[in-house]
Length: 640
Image 1 (cartoon, helix red, strand yellow):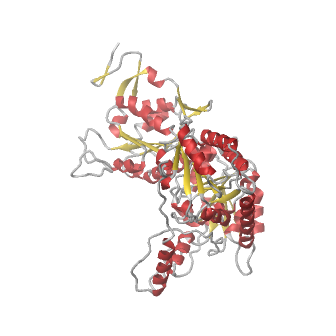
Image 2 (spheres, rainbow, N blue to C red):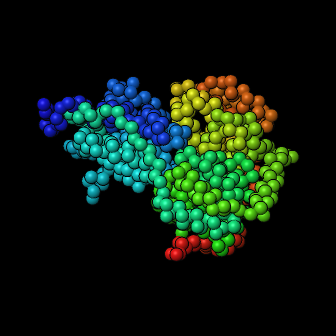
Image 3 (spheres, rainbow, N blue to C red):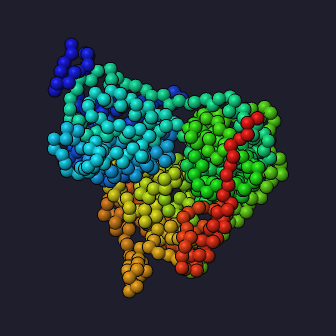
């Protein structure tokens, strides 16, 4: 039998008559991912904030079917996406959350989160409401009118930051759009933000969907095997090297390739550095040299400067990692890049190996060991010497200084000493990720998740929430490390943590402003301007007294258990006490504002003032432009 719904041709029976919004909810509730035989719900829940654009569409659908797709109430649309990102990280990209926002401002608030997901190659599903397709009501509340392109809406802003975008103008379009969207979510090379724009009138329109559309489906997350000739080319490049260096990126983590990378390093004597996303993926021995680049260790950067073969695994080689391509100074330096995404494998003139990290490194290690490749004892001794130098740097950074408050590094080191297997640290923008990247030791079994692909302020708290939602049973404590500047941008998701009774501990570093950028500003211009929380003084500038902001009172007002620490002893006491408290906790820690960890001998290119009347700025510009000359072009491999 064929039925008619509101004049639209329906599908042959058996069918299920649902609104477009109901179809989205029911369909998502039946989708699973499968990697290496492990099956889990692909999208187990949906964050949402309702407005007139979705409350009677998706809102009604969730109310009717939320037993199959759990609803979480967000407090800020951008934060919802960060929570989904945290969930995706915690599940190694095998699961994520959907995020629904209303039309106009609610939708556009998700754009920054979408960019964060896409930059980091992390899957999130976004369902922003859109204006009426029928246009009889134009212009509706919160509609942006474009006089030249009538079909353009605010949601077109998602096109630039999404890996997949579609606007649903008829319910039956979901039959093709939803599977296409989930294909992207589960493709390691293509994944990122997936956006399906849902006009508010279409959300409520009914259609007879084929019943088979809602049958459970498992999406295979493939492990693509690299071409043998690409692996052979990589082996040829590596075996010619005397001073190789591995860079382990986030792709190592998401492929669960940490152990095979460590075995390759041990078999061949190759040191392993890490990116922010790959923090903790290297071996826990002399060959693990820590994070590379501007936020890295001296040992990793010095080895990189002299490396003649750089083996990049699962990294897109961001400028913080490569020192804006000025870090690798050996004239013979060449890259081998192993990546599931071809666009990354071909960067910096690399010998490209396009394939899954785990399978590719396994094969690479087999070929290298079969051919007896190993680095010299002299090179291994050099690695140990540089590691000793870095230990000296760390010792100086962690030594208390007379007349100063405790340093941020001291706080993080103390927390590191108290954590162990099952504990997780989540951090993102500002000075905390720099110090976590440099000093955090994951050999105690803790995990470290640093978002620096987009360096998005406000990511930390919601990401910690998403992480806890994904690992409610298997993770001991989640520590969100956040600066006061970032906290003020996006602290309201603590209310969501209270609602859900989520056990996370926020370590709020109070240093009076955006000190990471102030440090950069001082380095490049010689003066501080506009980056601290100060009162306006008689000069007319924000150069007066620091603001007295009571972060403990703020966190308590949101429903959190709060602690405050002025000394390392007080912080240790608070951190121990927080383990016995359920729900969200906030530890406010006051640190020396201008005390940064030691520089790591790495250049970073930023735009500098090439014309100025200020001598101090001219001097620093000259210094920057001089250092800029170290940037290199890496030619593509010769045809042999």
